[in-house]
Image (cartoon, rainbow, N blue to C red; front, side, top):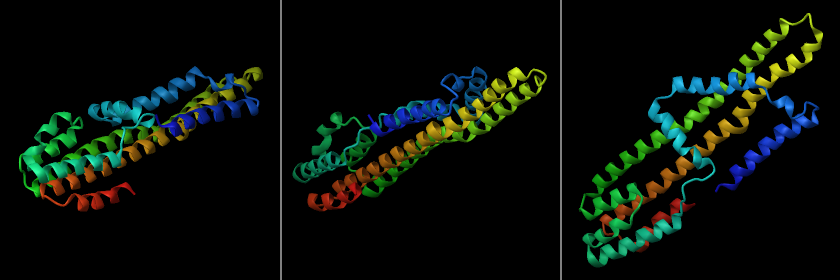
Length: 246
């Protein structure tokens, strides 16, 4: 679990609730069904219009990476590649074939299969780089779903505030309702700006960071597999791949 994300969410909620209490608005002042409908459902509606179904599904699938990013261990990955390099030097590339069933990562297994099949290094690079770029593009598009929601939410918050003020203007003859009506109107602004800056935009940035780190690891895998296919010395491979860990 990403502890920083968890702590951030807790602090965000504490900031909103604590700030509302300290300012005298109370916890109840943060709840407004009308604001929820306008801002939250409105933001969801806007992003659904903007986003293709496949991208939206991917976004819902990777959102867990904010709190539980994919496990990455660059040092372990390098050790694995070095073991394969030593095996290939002793037994030849076909000696790596028994390793295939134990490789869970589809990207790594595809690359290793190409090495075992004796594919040319340039062909391995081109094939894996195309797959890497394609996957990175899909994941980045999914991360931008939350970025888009973070852009729409504040605007929907303003719309909610305007609608609330319109309702207040219709009841100017009854001063007893003015204060409550104005407070409820601005709650929509809190929903919009708060959800965007405390949740949606930070989530998008966290996902982009995870995606870029994953892409860097896969670039390292590509270089390692090509070096194995070319029969390079394991020490040279280790020296080259270690640069990806910094």
